[in-house]
Length: 453
Image (cartoon, rainbow, N blue to C red; front, side, top):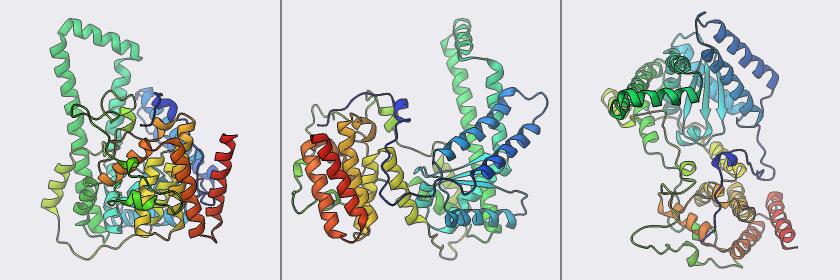
């Protein structure tokens, strides 16, 4: 089994492996950064100017932090600025806004995050994740998600969040003071009473969050219907979000994907590990130091999804016309794989690339993405970063994806080197006229020769 090293998750967040595919750099900065930053600054100033005179300073600071976070992310290449994609997304928002008579000039940013999500930041600011564009592949369902976020904006749900921040700010000026206050309460009121109050506070926050989501669903459906989209798309979109499972590989896809001419695939690489006393060592259990990091992304900002589905089902109209597919699902998949490779998350990239290869075996991008994933995995072993980049063997629920993780954990370093070189040799033979294949093979050969010296 692969030896791992305990490291701080927070340190990992600042370690990026520069591993984009040769020739695949994307437009990760706006055409006019100065103009975009100026617009964010102007919007921030307007928001702060509208605050009541007695508003706590923490509220204004939230607006400043929001703008600063966006500027930092944009400068770091965390957003995608493709003119065709931006026009498509902006056009859908404009259709919803105009058809419903809204007064809004939105700023819509497309995040390179693979998480299936979108968010309203308030005051006409929206972030659409590339993962959402991959998961929801037709325009009507996508329009419902946009309408839902537009509803959050128009219903001013950010205002309630700011009230909570202001309340927290006035209760205590520092974490140390809050801790002292909690100790005093425990001594004065007893643990049972304090815990009951905390549970009530959590319930109230959850109740408000549920109410906000349901009201955004309801208004979003109205926006959808007035804009010419099928209002039944609400139910389909929520079902897609509920059934989201991004890491799925067909049976034996790992074997097919890494069967090479010169280095035969070994079944021991993907064999089930021996279990003791019914347990599995090395899984993502509570004692794993990286358990919190490897916790899967969920729609944590969208609570009670089943309840929302029940409401959608009872109010859903007839199926209506067939939904039209939007043209950016495939582009989104490539962007997600590229992003995973940049972050050094080789298993995630490999899983998506191998699945895509099953669908499009002649597509060089996915073939080379898998080769890059193998090379990055070897680098993470050599640089003692393996546990930061490769999840535990029990991380993926899908059997085929779990085989991939067992391969990465159980293959020996010397075998991984041979497999990587044999795989890239086959890709050069498969795509002899594509310089990217040759460039990646040369990169691997140079790397292995360097570390062997």
